[in-house]
Amino acid sequence: MNESASPRDPAGPEAQTARRDGDILALPRDNRLFLTCAVLTLALVVLTVNVWLVARTVNQQSRNSREHAFWVICQPGFTVPERTSAFHMLVAAGNKEWRSAHLSELNLEKISLPGADLTACGFQRANLASANLAGARLEKAIFDLTDLSDADLPQADLSDAHLYKAVLKGANLRRANLRAAVLQEVKAEKVDLLAADVSDADCLMADFSRANLSGANFSGARLEAAVFKGAILTLARFNDANLKDADFTDSNWWRARGFTSEQISALKKKFPPSQDASSTLKEDYQKWAAK
Image (cartoon, rainbow, N blue to C red):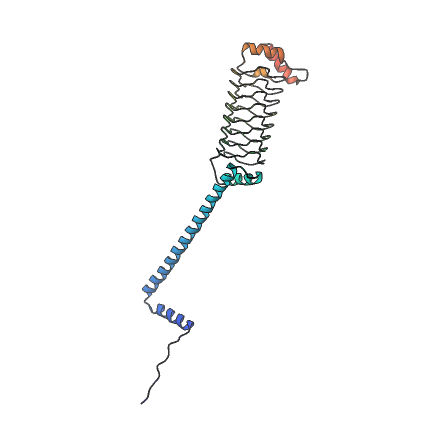
């Protein structure tokens, strides 16, 4: 009796793979297409879930980083460089709540934050020289002893801000809102306050020497012992302002508005153009006085 041995099935990995591929190829075309689409759909779902998980992790880490940064600028014990870095991080993240922030002594020279919302920030003794804060919201912010020299602040809102002994030399504050701000003893030589609102502000002993104050509103302001030497006061308003001991040497005060007749008489007596005044200023005063 003849006995023929049954052929053995291939047992190696390559043989098994080839068999699976053969099984797939043996399927009808529609079934193969369906299987391929199912595999691709599953891969896409897995990829989407992974991307979502990564994004969620990144967002959580970012949130934790912002929370830590806010903690750094609100709590004592952190160094100035640490608080400076935290401040930059929060600004980049679009943070808008600063009421608890302590940003004193930070070096923010030439920082650019136009339109930023920095309401009630505490910038005591900080360096903001040449900073760009155009149109920024700085209501009730504290700038005591802060260097804002040559800073760009046109149309910024500094209402009720505190700038005791701040340095504003050469700063651009055109059309800025400084209503009811504290400007005691500020050093504001050559500051540009064209059409700015400084009404009801406390400007005790403020130095506005050679400043451009054209069209500025000082109505109701406290200007005791304020200095306006060489300042341009064309169309500036001083209605109900306290001018006790204010110094208007070589300013064109006669081109301002809102002085009482008594104040005008006192200004004519005390502050006609001096010998050091420019010929243009002297001629303009003579034209006004001759009317």
